[in-house]
Length: 152
Ligand code: NI
View 1 (tube, rainbow, N blue to C red):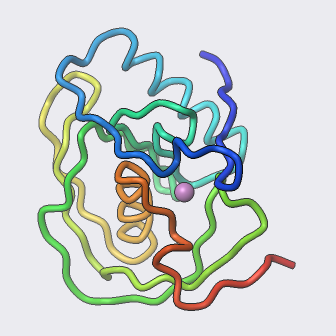
View 2: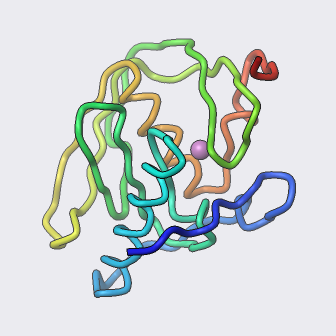
């Protein structure tokens, strides 16, 4: 495993690009996942998407303190309710913003063994899933923000 550099929204236009679906989950994808997990924990983040380490592939990892979740080709298949909570992003350091998100989402995708998985998230987990999946389409939370402010 290895730490990867986290891309910065003001310097790295790759964060604005769309990521490609993964057709073949090979060793390279496993290494990418392992590196993303190590990088996320080292940076004390609660989520990371592959474009944030410069790879335009549809891969996300999340750990909001309830255990690690890895999803390949994640797709939101159901959402309901609404919440307005503060978010930050490892690629947008020093900025916090209130973002409207669904209160509950259901996400389908694949795990590292190419097995289909369904992940349901409520509250912070729902926001994290939406935030990370947005990264795969080149969308940052500040694009969706209602109120943006600098962190103390
Ligand atoms: Ni982010």
